[in-house]
Each structure stands twice: as C-alpha cells, then as structure tokens.
Length: 372
Figure 1 (cartoon, rainbow, N blue to C red):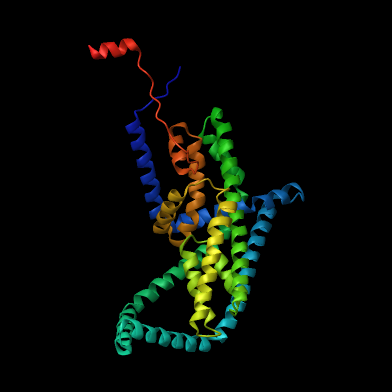
Figure 2: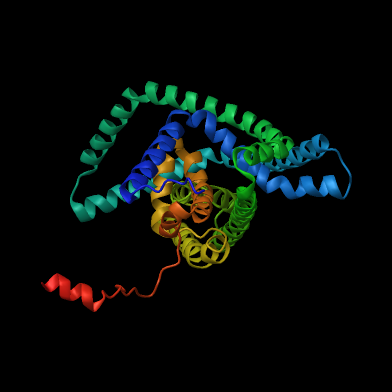
C-alpha cells in the first residue's frame, strides 16, 4: 500500500524555500565553526586517493595513512609559505626604493591632473590630507578588526588540518551514519550521490590547482618579459590569489603594480603590468576556466556569481572560495531527488537552443461541451 503524500506545488515550493532560508541562517550564524569544517572536508576529499593508496598498496593502518596524507599537505603549504616569505623579505629590502618611486609616481599623476583638469597641486594635497585624517580617526577600529581577523585566521589554519585528519579517519563511520538515515531501497541512489559528489569535488579542486599553476606561469612570463623585478614571486602570488573569485585578481594586480615600482616610477611600467594582468585574465576566463573548471562543475555563470556573492556575505573570502563546490554538491543532490530536479536543472549550464510549448489537444467532445 502506497502511503506517500503528494502535496500541491505551492506547498512543496514553500517547504523548499523554508529549508533554503534555514540553511542560510545556520551558515550565517555558525560560519566561524562551519567554514573550517567545510574546508577540512574539501581537503579530505582531495587527499582521499593518497589515503587509499597507502591503505591498499602499502597496507598502512587507517590512522597512519590519514596522518601521512595530512602531513604531506601541510608540508606543501608550509613550503609555499617559506618560499613566499623568503622572496617577500627581498622586496622589504627595496622598500625605500618603492616609497621613493611611489612619491615620484604620485607627483607625475598630480602634474597630469593639473594640466588636464586644472586642479592645482595645493587642492590635490588638501584633499589627500583630508582623506588621510579621516583614515587616522578610524585607524584604531581598523587595527582592532584586523587583529581579530588575523587571530581567527590563525585559529582556522590550526583547526583545518585537524578536521581534515578526523574526516579522513572517520569517513566510513560517516557513510554508515548516512546509510542508517535512509531505507535500504534508497541506498543505491545514496551511493551514487556520494560517489558523484566525491568525483565532482576532487575534479574541481584538482582543476583549481592546475589553473593556479597555469596563471602563475603565464603571469611570471609576462612580468619577466616587461622587466618587472621579482616576476616569479608576483606570478605565484597572482596564481594563489586567483583562487578567490573576482576579488583575488584585483588584489594581486594592486600588489604587482606596487612591487613593479622597485625598479622605476615610469607610467609605462604600470601600464605594462596592467596589460599583462588583463591578457592573463582573458586567457584564464576564455581558455583555462572553460577547459579545466567548467568541465568539472556544471554550474551556470549566473548561479555561480550569485553564490559567490552570498558566500562572501556569509563567510568572507573563505565563503567565496567554498561557494562553487557547495553549489556543485547541492546540484548533484537536487538532480537525484525527483521533487527538486527542476532546481538542479536551473543551476546547470545545459541551455536549450529553443523551446516550443506543446499543449495536449482536448477531445472534440469536450470542445463542443465548452462551446455550449
């Protein structure tokens, strides 16, 4: 006997919206707790092949395999940070030159504004002084917020490896928990969902790493050819910041322009840096992203942008980074649930060329009755 209740569309829509609002509220209120856990989950999925290799091929116990995988990942991150800190220390030695070139660059800009917009040097300096005074007034609040942000970031960086290790260690425990939540007739569908989520997240993260390497290499080559000092360092920083959608590349561009002033204050160098960044972004957006990223995650651009904005509001930079993989997971779940399948289609990027409405013709007898 089928006891399934079928609700009208407006009730199902209301339930769906209430669930989305509830999930969003939970993410907003608990972002400081959930963001490190979600980051640990993504890294655990990425490291899972290493753990499987150590378990199956080398016969290592699960605890040791998970520990080695996390230690390898942490060692890689520490190695990158050591390289960046070593190179940045060289830039710090050129700080005096950068400061002097920035002053010369500002003077040239002021002369250009005076010649073309007829704003005197005194008026420009007065405006800069007013802005500087306002910034100093808010300085204490900004410093306090920055210190809290740095503290939270350091705490998250400590917790993420721990969460990653625990997720790898208890992964079978979590799968069994999910299996207990559903009846056995749904286990095949559940297994398919988990398998696809694992493959999608792993492919997306590996694609991001490939994109980061490609952007770093292209930016380094471009900066090297126009004669920018520390081209490799700036290219690596650009590739890493490019992982943060939209915002990261702007920050990388500003840092690159400032660092380029170690050699010369000429405007041509700044223009060259901007051109390199624009060319790399054109290649990234039109070649690398469609080839590497979009083939891994079938999410359309509109949903991606809205998701990134919402993620930024909920979890800051980490929320922006997590937005795309979480949307991909949500789409996979929607595609496997009959009632939510239209929402999964809405999130996808399979655009039809055209759509023709097809109406079922009424029987002639019904038409005659309606005319009467």
